Image (tube, rainbow, N blue to C red; front, top):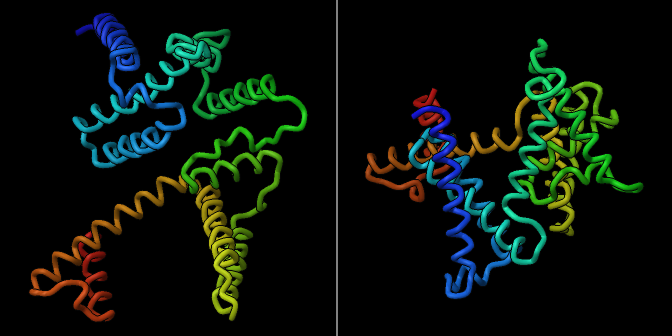
Length: 274
């Protein structure tokens, strides 16, 4: 199938998807779909986003195709609800995206087309266009951090907050300063844990400070804190499963083992993976 045929097919099935969504929300459509609001489907959007990431990490292309469809459903859902209240339509959503992509890629569509530009230049231009767009939207008194969505996963939000504050040089000059800050936060958490009052609110606050600092270390080290943590979670799952299987081979279970035995199985799992 040629590129033109692929585009024609995409336009046709996309239009069909828009029609299906409208039918589901219309009188006589699906009772559950008709009851949903912008707020009620937010949780599903977050779930579908994570399922897309999971399919990518597993390199499961069949599953990824399905999960991307589920994620697209969320976009169609939001747009249909907005259409019903005369806010905007799915066409407005796609048109706004098209205009943004063209505006932010002058080296492809605009006055810089054909000029030699590297990835660094592309990223600098992209950030400048974003800055200009935010400036047009904002009035006096709004925060630089308003551009960071509050409903991001916490590790991702922490890293993006650090990126924004670093733009006005509110950052540690060297990464070593962050390691010192990490030790400071760890000491404060230990102090709260040792306190006779054992204030859970203060303990949670200190734990949050520790995690926020760890996210900034990841940022300064060039790692994505959210992806790094997801990868670590996946490693733990694999190693823990290895431990469970090893225990079963011994005719036992992890719950029946001593701490020393569990540590030995963990070391075996790490060695097996490496």
